[in-house]
Image (tube, rainbow, N blue to C red; front, side, top):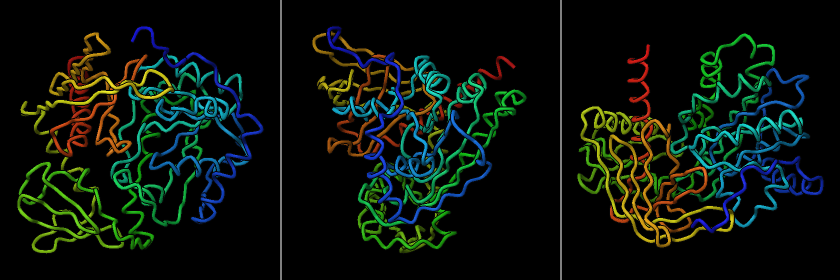
Length: 415
């Protein structure tokens, strides 16, 4: 593995090549026109690049909405390394900046700074770092406020609506949904000087709040897609009736428990209703947060533990994945421990709780199964559990809650 070329994170970003801009517009505008995109701009009059554009992250269509929102300007986009696979030349030449997810990366800060100060460009960042799992906002890194404070450039928020409902992470079949977006300058250049890092983070977190199912209900958006609930059990893995985990199933417009038989239907406006008995969570994100609270309780009770045999693949560069065979993954109160064989050398990767504020997960990734990925600065490991079903959502909850709990402990010990 030492002889394998690593992705060059030091290579300077460029402004999008002029001959690629028509292609970006051709790929973006027909989609957003068809979906009747409406952009509500607030505080944007007179604002010109360079500035930081923070955006919610729901589906691939996000990039098309962003293209329309900043038209006729272009941007440097932060893109995860798997996005570069077999198209590194193209992404570099449209101005993309590579990132390994959930790592402390000083090189990324330098690339953003260069894009703002030297290229005088917009830098588009999706700090949730993965598609929304259930149509609500995810945890953001505290370092975001520090970065904004140091860079001293205006901050614009692009809060998109309809993107998740068009193509949820757990069921990628497209359905027609009209799109909308709020584009708001949330911090001016002058305000950065007087706002503290905590105040910047508070303003950013407030701007990131969204709930796609509530938006659907409020706007009376009917989605009569027949398989609208298929695979939602990958996110809603715990039965609220019998509290059994990883025994949920889903098909068509239904989600059901294989253990107790409780069944719920999702209507065309995104609400759940039990076929028989009480409907514990008509609003889908409430079920999701119910699961989070149970994971947090396990951690506080010191009963949380995960272990499974896994398949491991390495992604050191943009050439593609390198199979590393089987290994073992443990996640407990001490964080992650991954053990395996890395082309003849022993692989041991440990990630303590405070090293990751969240976790990138994928459902049926490339038809290989559900997976998580763990990154170092030089590599990203894609890890597929082999015997535990529908477990990656719970792993993501555990990572986030462990991080919060450990951070709270630090604050208590260092007031």
